[in-house]
Length: 163
Image 1 (cartoon, helix red, strand yellow):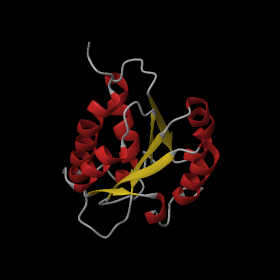
Image 2 (cartoon, one colour):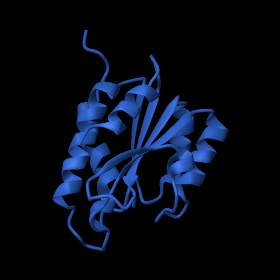
Image 3 (spheres, one colour):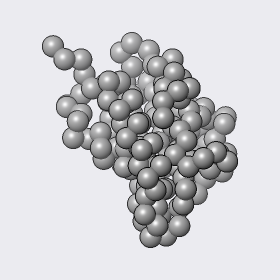
Image 4 (tube, helix red, strand yellow):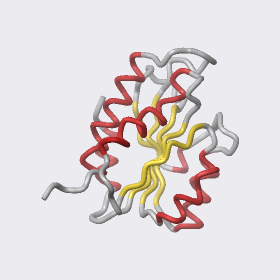
């Protein structure tokens, strides 16, 4: 499950970056909940940190821009299901100009442009190919494995170094 996207993640980071992670998705729509799953898994692992903010944005990420603005991140990572015509559970690193379409009220490309313009921060999407986003569908095993891989990759990035 690791590969190009983890390399892109490491390359996107600069020492001392303040990172906001926004998990996006509708928890009643199967694999669309992947972003929320990742943030919920990371939350108990993250000690109080001045360099990381976790937001479970549900299906209305635009409602959480105030918290991001107050945090003043250098990098905003959006995590969401993304239809990329690849096998379910495939994880990709997407830059704002690669984000097309959206099942959300406000397209993620517009949200990314807003955050970049207003805050001067970098924005990227960690997209996961869903198997199903049907109402009341369970989360697929492939997307569960992908969410665990994302949590594993983000832990050392977000957790403060141990003394």
